[in-house]
Image (cartoon, helix red, strand yellow):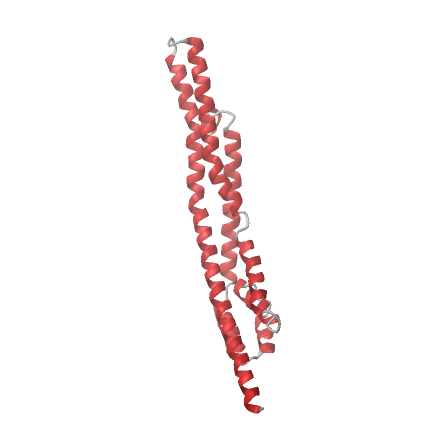
Length: 210
């Protein structure tokens, strides 16, 4: 590997940097989603919605117990601001959660785009050097020219390799964000419906009493 790296020329150094950045982001995002999976508590989400149906807000506060489930955090934001603007409160909390889920994804996307371009750039430089050598030596030493072209292609192969190995986790992380957004929309809508039914029932009771 060291020999191949040295043969690739100076462009291999920025390619190495791209690979290290991409690997760091991939590892960080894997750990992030593993942590989020551990923190998910579907039973607690269902219990909170059940308590909201009866308007037991104090019991909801007690049930949360410092939960780090992102869905619960969004529901809590809506519950705390239910008397003002539940929907906007949940939208704001959801935007923060989605931003956290998309952290460093732009960096990974940039590495996927830049790595092949750097590889082609290195190849072009290598071919230019090979033609310079061909112009200086003529066809007396064709092996030196072909060897130079072969070395130049190393950067293209390296850049493509980095992009190919990075695009799979990139798409996986994007799919996880999409699924998380769908879950957020599902339970936020459920809370909104539950609260509207509760307030409507309360208004009906008030009207009946009057």
